Image (cartoon, rainbow, N blue to C red; front, side, top):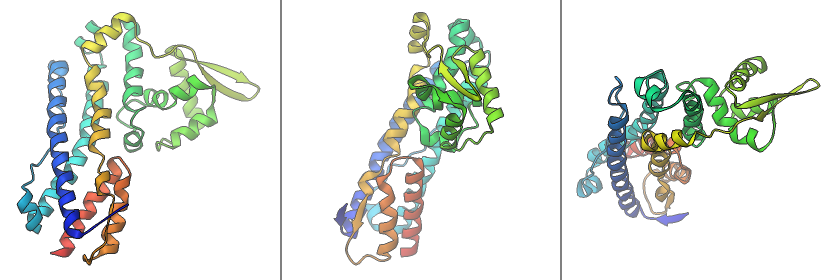
Length: 285
């Protein structure tokens, strides 16, 4: 971990805010553009990410302005979470729910596959987001998204799937899981294997769209589906703040403990760091 003075840290913090402004502006515009191109006929609106272009001199010298800027960044982290949630809501509550554009763009087989495929692409990649939100996407798609690669690699027992779901804060009883797995089996993706009293699941058909389905997907919603992962991995990354302030700054133990959390990527760590930075600078006033 790098040692810095309080003044060096403040300059580093400004640089991070400037980076976050650039990412938020670019990614929010991209998200809105793809949303409008694909969901124009649906009565749904995206949750966009607010941004702030920070004045460097004011940020370095004016504590009230600094606190205001940090609070906006903290809120923008919340916006990012709600942006992804708004996309999943639009997909599963509007687009996939017999919307004309969905039904006309994809054949019946691809329609079934796509609901699972999109869950795997978004929730399967963003495990930390899935820990915070496992209610927006219908549970059978979420269960398969979380366990698809594991089942594909090796037959999974009911107990193994239940344990894996606990990692994203989904707590089911065995009989509840069996009901969902029966639905997934009925959709054609898994096979149930009974060995004595033990029940396992094996992949029957992989999540592969037809050639026509792939082509249509790439021409329509693919960039929207890819957006959450690209945004999450770039925006929720403030590792530059993982430093130690080693001069005679006030409350050094508090601030240095907070900054250790910056080493971890993701919404939870970033929100924690900026919430406590606000508290820190309020203490200094």
